[in-house]
Amino acid sequence: MAIPKDARINLSPEDIPKRWYNLASDLPDLKPPLNPGTGEVAKPSDFEPIFCKEIIKQEGSTERYIDIPEEVRDNLIYLNRPAPLQRAYRLEKALKTPAKIYFKREDMSPLGSHKGNTALAQAYYNAEAGIHTLTTETGAGQWGTALAMVSNLYDLDTTVFMVKGSYMAKPLRKTIINTYGAKIYASPSEYTEFGKKVLKEHPETSGSLGIAISEACELAAKDPGTNYSLGSVLNHVMLHQTVIGQETMQQMEIGEITPDYVVACTGGGSNFGGMVFPMLGKKIRGEGFKDTQFVAVEPKAAPSLTKGEFKYDFGDTGGFTPLLMMYTLGSEFIPNAIHAGGLRYHGMSPLVSAAYDSGMISARSYDQTATFEAGLLFARTEGIIPAPESCHALKGAIDLALDAKAKHEEKTIVFCLSGHGLLDLYGYEQYMDGTLPSSDIEN
Image (cartoon, rainbow, N blue to C red):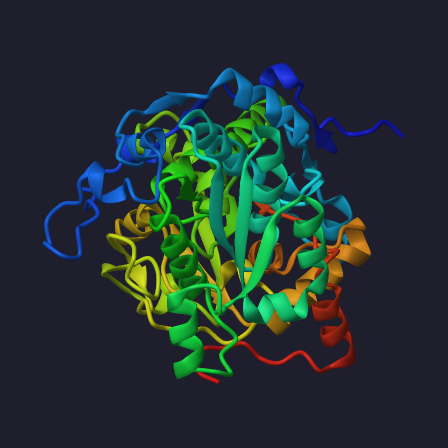
């Protein structure tokens, strides 16, 4: 039997994008960050205690395209870019759906996730600026792993604050991050003043991304040779991730694929933005994707889009960041502990938030029991164990495929498999033995 041309669509290294796409160029009336002390629009100098100048420049840019430095582009090959676009034939068969389901394989990076796309760029720019140390937060550990690994390419030291709940549930993340030469602390920690404060007030807390961000920012602000590196939320991170969507567009053109739905998980927004923004930009400009719907899928434990409020808020718990216009559950909100630690954040990227507020994208949320059920089905049909975060996008794609089945419609669904779940097997074990707790915010 001949292999269908859309079974797996690969690109060559020459096809790695040469420019990042910036959605800020095509979104009208974006609300700028504010200085929390003055209430006025934040200036570049407000970011200088924690970011290098090139990152600050990209954060405020409204240019449509920004060139990818040649060294960064070369190193994207090191992360196994371009990533394949693959059809989920066996999943379609199991669902008995007329829908076609495709997934972008970010799990095939040596890191196991999409996070290296921006880690490379941020490490490069900081090294060019003479910085010797980077600090960061991490939820599930994929972002901390990515920054730890690429820091070796640029002779940088890295300190990672990992959300305590995930740190305890995934001890091998510590081993991996240490293997790459970085330091790692469970957050909240005794290593920072803010961490000590949280521990004194909430000694039993499982932590949150907002707390971990505060600890990392505090460390960066104290040393001019140390900068903070962020894994999601801010515009420059969204920018660096758009290699995902640009590659996917090339692959859909080769495979003659016209998506009815493009689906990705959302926590801070980097995976969703990377996958969707290049296509959404074309839709806004009237250059394609006219009938495509973009679906963001988040956990019920941290449903910032579906239950949050669109307002100015801090990106962290301690109030170190500028105020960002975003959907938020409140910067002091600490979500229930879930295995999808990378989605366990109180707010949402300002760019994703603006697109949602304008009705350009839709959102839905799921309890973690439903997403692990989807992950188990995917493992047994496609042979890939997806990360708990990716299971949210997968669950969204499955529900759309089942809806197409109920309506006897031949829909085309493309989702982003943001990473593998080989370090998340405890969550699968809990699901299979019936001990996985509900993660709904109302419980």
